[in-house]
Image (cartoon, rainbow, N blue to C red; front, side):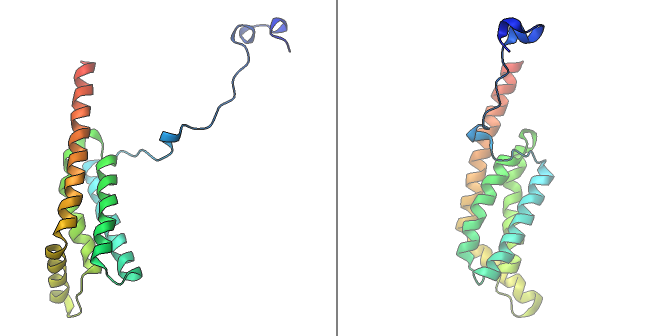
Length: 153
């Protein structure tokens, strides 16, 4: 139907464009976790990754450390702005919790505990590196959030 023959609001607006594809940058989920939710997320993720590491890689501490880095990044990105400063605190706890399935503990509870402490001592570089990455990301996000709040006021 030609534009001149249309009546009502359609004559003024013209044809309705069809929706295009979604923007490339917005395909990933954008969850906002509370401080407690972020802590639970990283602990659950590290326990799962620790169990997978023990199953697939034979309890490789290097693979466990490498898998810790994306969990740090995701935790720092997904915590809501009001709870940003809790993310770097929860990450070392999650690292220690995830070491339980990976730790070499064949002599019962005390052997497992000693394996966790040995893992914490020998893999401290991954722990500090991941926590540092998350800390820097959290600080940058926090500064941007505070500046945007000041502009609105």
